[in-house]
Length: 289
Image (tube, rainbow, N blue to C red; front, side, top):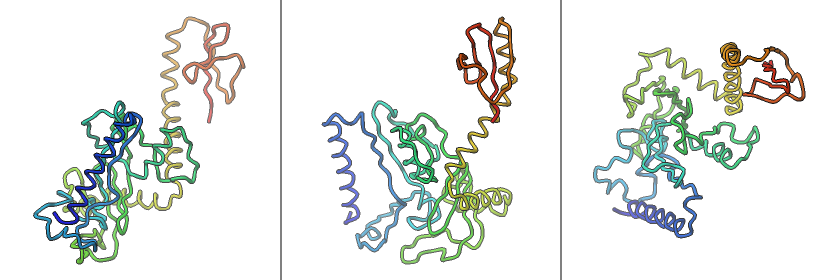
């Protein structure tokens, strides 16, 4: 297998030693183990480790194309295994879209730490999908490989860029093209069928989103603000419905208040919007924001 194969076997062996050590110290149930990679495969990276000579038909990236230095997904879509006995169910697979940069915000949430506004501005709390509690991940993610691309849903957009389409010394496609590229990853994981001319509206949507993110100095802050505004809008929309339901459920005299401040100190919070005083009058306080 050559030096490259030896390195892979050593990696596998040492990973097993780490897991066995955690078991022997009774630390496995209190330890999160993450196994992943920082970039996609590259066979000839100057190490002279017989990786090309002894490839023997193996395709490290499977159906994908590109590699470590590429904007194609072979360079950036990384396998990842997470182990936390008692919390993450074994043998489960998730298709949630997450990024390794999300580790910062996610584990800050896990440990009860509050990130400052300038700490990891493009890191999002993805703890629920990472632990298998949710199948919903990011709505989009930016990929970088000698240029930028963006994934949203099933679609991937690669912005036009200069440079060679092939790194000859490494036999690696870069994804460089003077034209915009659009791929449906659900149908075309290998990114071989450019649909940019067929779906110009989708190109426009994703290119504008990419430019917006590039210009944004704090993606997480703006995302949280947008999420908050959306939640408040939904609450306002549902308020009349909830109000009618409350009316149906009570027989006590009913009083309604619209105010920007709490009305009485002795009122108790009920369901985030309702207040009950000692006289058992149900009072709904709608806080304007």
